[in-house]
Length: 63
Image (cartoon, rainbow, N blue to C red; front, side):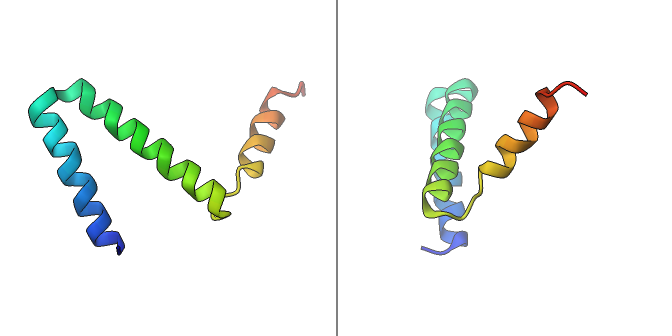
C-alpha cells in the first residue's frame, strides 16, 4: 500500500468515526492511529527515539 492509498484509508476511517460518533471520538481514533504509527516506525528502526530523550534530559539538567 503506497502513501496515497494509506492516507485515503486513514481519512475515510476518521471521517466515518466523525459522522457516526462525533468529534471527540474522532480525535481519540486519530491519537491512537498516530501512536501506532510512531511505535511502528520505532520498531522498524526508522525513527530514532534516543535523540528525543537526550533533548528532554538536557532540558531538565540544571544550567
